[in-house]
Length: 368
Image (tube, rainbow, N blue to C red):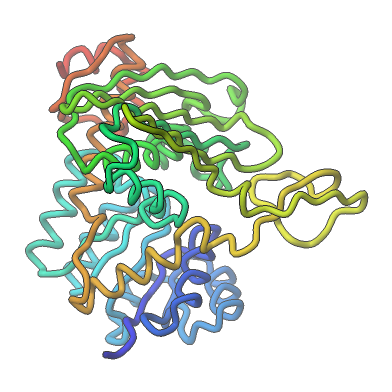
């Protein structure tokens, strides 16, 4: 069957990841268009990745008959409207994490795509990262017995995009940026069980001058099965990316470091051109990763989504997945604001962004 023709909305860091991922699975898809509100950004991105068409108005891209599926890499506050507009245009949607800002938006996105008969796919690359997939395969085969604790941590020095420091555009801080990965991962790893409660401790430890959001957090998820998910999220780790999991069962355990086992320990007094993610400099000791996109799972993710569009596979990460994460994000920020465990379901109305439940705990209390 023909390749799935993809349009990317956005032209910054994550858009580069998606374009690179699609190039790594050329038998399944190709990027045929990009849209970015800044003409120079759109044009340079298209040139860099060999994309034939560049638009400054995303609505023009949605009218492009060649585009079958769009990948949304724009700021969080735009996800819902872009998804709804894309659904109305008959395009399948891949939406980057987190799905949106509010649960109401999540429901509207799911409803719009359902009515239009298009797929809403939630871009959680940890479901496809080879090391983590192997750990889940072992767990599913019973290698660890009954799994009772899953830990995921992501820590680095802060987001690439300036907009993510602005809670009006992002909806929150490190938990919105990194914690959403851990929430999705623990839930998926354990077989997507019902979530019973959420407890989160948040703080702004380092970046008070840059953001009103949380830059460090620990989030605890209690599942109906009795298993626990423990998620560590931090923007306060200089020197590069740290992404790890730990899995504990009554008959075994495993650990996985997403990147370091695939890195080349490197020392350079002068530095080098290869960009080591989240490292401020390449002088001294650094750990450049080979096949970086593959280790993260981006090409495998986009291949799966392209095959879903062609009806060859059933989505393992869809709009409903994003909504589950969104509800836990709400509960996490409410828990941090109130200093107590939040029981699910938890769907407060009229909240514009999750971080409001932390900053104004009286609103969280009113929602209980």
